[in-house]
Amino acid sequence: MITRAVVVPQPPLLVPRLSPGPEPELAALREACLAAVGRLGPRWTAVGAAGKDQVIGPDAAGSFLGYGVDERVSLSADGVARALPLPALIAGWLRERAGAEAVEVRLVDRATPPEDCARKGSELTGDLLILGDGSNRHGPRSPGSEDERAPAFDEAVAAALAKADTRALLKVDPGLADELGAGGRVPWQVLAGVPGEWRAELLYSAAPFGVAYHVAVWERG
Image 1: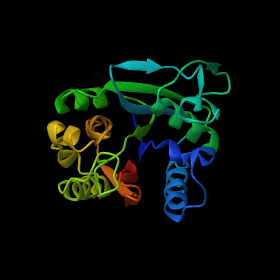
Image 2: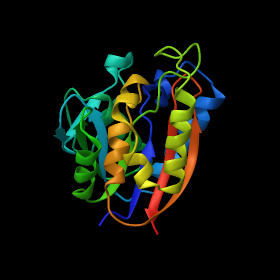
Image 3: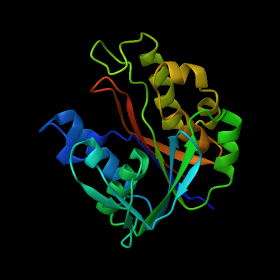
Image 4: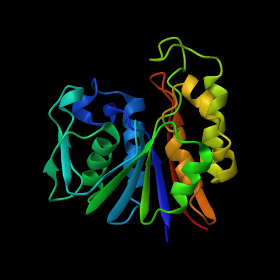
């Protein structure tokens, strides 16, 4: 049975060597992410979105070289180097900082409907690491260009994560999420499919660089 789950974003800027320098908002985000994963046990199941369903075992390792710096990470102590997608790289980086033994990464097709996301969530085991960003359309400097719908969208997501409101998460519209560049929709809805009652705590929710980032911890009620 899953006893706890952590929701974090996946910007490469979480990694200090990939960040532009001292930045209070970035430091606060990083601190929240590390505090959240510190509550997980020694072995994790990570869930992220990708172009197709895929499972990456803990015997893998990779590098952020594609993002500008050869920062190497591993999903376990015995990881073998290969090309890894961003969710797996962030999962590995967080695992190492938390001192966890291993993380298996489950990537879910980003076009998966909410009901299928929920079904996948009902089949998971182990402590969960849910990886995904909110809308990338906050403000005039946002990567996806400003959209006036973005603030309300991410306020609703943050409220659902803060209350462990699985029904609200499952109601997130896939089309709207895509239009707003919210890559976390699928992983959040996988989490929403995990059965049981939860206590929730929202550790961080902001859009410091035009992209919304949410950090939350869910534990069994």
